[in-house]
Each structure stands twice: as C-alpha cells, then as structure tokens.
Length: 512
Image (cartoon, rainbow, N blue to C red; front, side, top):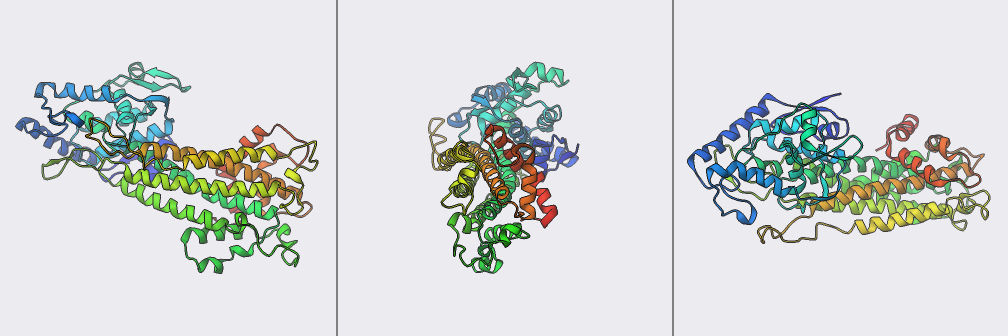
C-alpha cells in the first residue's frame, strides 16, 4: 500500500490511478496546508470588510446579485450542498468517485479556493476510511463543472446523503462516518461552493479511460496480428519503410507491433513465397495500422488535454495571491468533452475494424480454407457464428455512442449558465465505448486463436502460441459447440488483464 502525498503543485495520473484503483492512502503535504491557509486568510479578510464577492457574500448562478447577510453565510453553504445533490440513477463506479474526490482534494490543494485545510483533510479522511459517496449517474451538464456529482460527495462530509455499502447497496452517510470514527464538518463562507465547482468528475473519468485505452489499443494490435496470421495474410504491409513515408507516429507504432507479432510463425512461412497468394489483403487487414495508429494519435491528444487539466485551477471564484477574488469560466468542461468525444470516435473505429476481421475469419469464402464459422463440423455446429452477431451489435452501439455529446447544450439557471459542455456525458459514454471495445477484441482474440488452432500442424508465432495458451483453459480445442458466453467472458478478461501482453512481451520484446 502506497501513500500519495498531495502537494500544492497537484498530482500525477499515476497518483490518481493508485488511489482510484489501487486503494493507496492519501496525505496532505505541509506546504499544501500552508497554501490553503494563506488562501483562506484572504477570504476571511473579505468577510471582515463586508465586500460583495460572488459565492462568499452572494447567492449562486442566477442569484449572483442576491446579497447574503453575514449571519446566514454558513447556512448558504450548507443549503447549496443539499440543493445541488440532486442526481438520479444508478451509482457511479467506486473508482470514478474515488478519482473525483482525489481531484477535488487536488483542486483545493492548489491554494486558489479560499477554504480551510480541514475541507481537504475531510475528503482525505473519506478516501482513507474507504467511504465512497453514492453519486448518481445523472445530474451533471459539465456546466459549472460537475456540480451535482460533487455535491453528493460533499453531502457525505456533512454526515448526510448516501454512501456505497460493501455489496454496492445504498447506506446512510451519518452512521457510516460514525463507524469509521469520523465526524461531520461544518462549512464556512465559500467552502460549499469550493467543494462542488470544477471538472473533477469529467477529468477523473477521462484519466481512467486514457489508462484503459492505452492498454486496449496495444491489445488491438495483438488481436489484429492473430487474425491476420490465421487468415494467411501478408506481413509486408507492415514493413517500417512503408510507414516512414506517411509519418503519423501512432501508425508507425502499430505497424511495428503487428510486424513483430507476426515473426517466427510457421503459418506465415507456409505461404510467404506462394505466387498464388493474394496480391493485396483486405483493408481490415492491410490498413490495421492506419486505423489503430490514428486512434493512438487521438489518445495522445486526449492525454495532452488531461495533463493540462491536472495543472489547472478550475474553481470559481478563485482567490489570487495578490488578494483579489475573481470570477472565472475555468470550470467549463469543453476541453475535456471534446477530447472524450474524439477518443470515443477513435475507440469505436478500432472495434469496428476488429469486427470486420472476425467476419472474414468466419466466412468460408474469404478465410482462405478455414472451415465455416471456425467449426470443424459446420452444419450441426455453428461455431463462432453468433459471437460475430454479438460483435456486430456492439459495433452498432459504439457507433451511436460515438456521436459527440459536446455539441449539445441545454441552458440552465435562469439562462445564467446558457452554454454547457456536456463533458460528464462525453466522458461517461467514453468509458462505455471502451468496455465495449474490450468485448470486441475478446471476440477477435477467440476467433484468431480458433483460426490458428485450425492451421495445425503448422505452428503459430510466439505471440499466437501465447494467445492459444491463454485461452486453453476455457476455450479448449476446436470441436463441438459449447456454451459460448463464459468463453467470451474469459476472453474479455484476458484482453483487459496484463498477463497475455506480458507473456507476449517476454517472448518477442516490448510492444509500443
């Protein structure tokens, strides 16, 4: 168990993954506490001077011109949290909520929010006690950031609202805090607003998705190579000199991966010098690096946007070091929404081209002498016929999900928030696209392995041998039809996990 120490300069993606997925502990650096205390002193000065400042001495949104009397400002902050915790629907996954809470700690730690250090410490205490607020999936427009989701997190700090139970059930927050030895906090001026104004939910989901996409795009090269090998495809389109003349970085990486994955194969050797072999393979084989490579470049763009956001102050208003408190629009989720939508399009296409290779593997007229639907006894048995139906249905869903959320906008708050980003929706559906991509690559993995097995006695590449071994326990050898759903689940777990890639890299060297 590691400890992530929050500095006033922020956190890294590795820190977020360690806390969200690895249950690392969290601590505040002394410098962070000092930065927050200095920022809070400025807000206390505003309180003493009686100056009108948004969110400190006024209402919110369309009520920004409503003055709040000093004796009611703490009440204002509590009312804000209760009213904004208005989400509905199923709870967000634990890892998303933990990422969101850590990013809110990061935001407060930058020392521009004007809150007491105990606000950040209270969130840290929730993380370290493994208390996860129940955050409904619907409620954020990515307008003033993720107001409703963050309000559900903040409500837990007040000892109100709901938390996730051990089995995913909904429990009251008050008893959960008490059981962990934690006490509800009381908010002072500006603190409720600082707990909920920002892009933390969107950014958390984007960073988690980027980590998943990095792995899946490499696994897409693996499954593509297996399918190409099984279909007696050519390795020549993946020669490095052919990609040097079109210097897209991701394309070169994917081509190098596929070329390396195809080496050392008796199956490939069996037809390399065959003059009757097809002059050109189909696009889904020959253009695999161009599609997967473009997706890699899109991923690089999304990663650049997320890295910038990790360095950003996204609160509103912000407390500047010279004592000014200024309103900003930094909470608007457009950069994250655009990046997530772009990455969803790319991931959907990686899955779509994989499904086309599966279809070729199953079609006796195009698979180069493999049996129909990869069944040794087609007719009585249907082989992987319906696995391709499932893949086709997932491709269709991913195409719907690839329609950008960030081009939409619904005005809210009496037209004060008259253009919203829909960044929460964009990042949430991106995660669904990546889950679907995992299933699509699992079908290609299964079909590729079946095809390699059916090429026996020719032996596949070292990567192919590793893939066959990875599925041996559940997929077995080609033969009579079996209950296919658990086989596909196991294949999806192999795609999502690190073991197969690690085994392949042990045999052929690191993949890009």
